[in-house]
Image (cartoon, protein in one colour):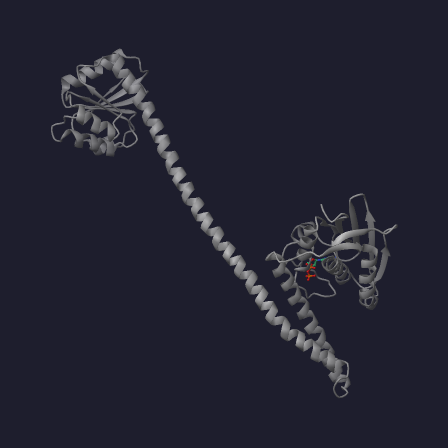
Length: 395
Ligand code: ADP
């Protein structure tokens, strides 16, 4: 291997076993304007492993090296320099061989003695550019193949996740149905005992059974929450809408929960809408939404707390704000509150048991009505949950 350095620029490898031809090529190169360049000469394949370490911009390759057939010479250099364009410079005027070698990736095939400086200049310039775009194309193809493979993988992952989700819905639904039936039977029998259907109970028995009754009720509440969410996630909620006077709806919920609030010595203030207005809603479902928020307001507020329910309206919406001065919720917790199974660790609450599903379900039901539940809260100060419903039943 010998080297001619004109200066830093295009790095050319001339592979030629005939010294005269090699000199001729370098003379032609001197005549053409291809900017700065550097030439390395090789006369056989012996130094290939050493040459491979150099990054050449172009290889001018004589096919007739003494030790190999022409096509094999090309293949050898092409394998050794897969990213470098190769221009064949040969004395062999063989159209078939030329076509074969070009098909295998050679950039050009020039017959010695038939080309001048301008042909060589063009061959070098075009070969370098062509090879660059071939490499770019190859990279793009690899990328596109990879993207296609990723897309197929994602598709099958999506199918798998959908199947898992369906399996989870089915599991939740079956599990909670199977749990609810025996739990409901237990409730009925305990209720009968408490109501004196059997022999009179001792004070001690009465206390035990009351405590069992309450535990069973908590269990049933959680099972019902699970069932409601399973139904919602499976897309099985059907709304049965009618025009409902929300003042009356809220008053009836307050009447039902009044005893619980009184037990905790919590004060309830209700400011109904004047004049009253009706909204187009599924009464049973929206009733459960308000029950849940009001129940939480009591559960997460201390004894003696004050809970206010205020209804207001604009042209399009009816707003029910349920405000407590209880433990409040931090800003970071507000973001996760309407997600499934989100319960906040709090040092204080009247009823630490719960499923963390109530607000998720409530938000989704209100959204199905075209509305939204908004929350304004400060830790230690209290929370205001505002249910915003479109009066027409549509967003
Ligand atoms: P559950 O009450 O069954 O745990 P919810 O979805 O109704 O489930 O409520 C989720 C969590 O939000 C509760 O565990 C509680 O930490 C918090 N939370 C709800 N309402 C209030 C409130 N008014 N004040 C403070 N925290 C509340």
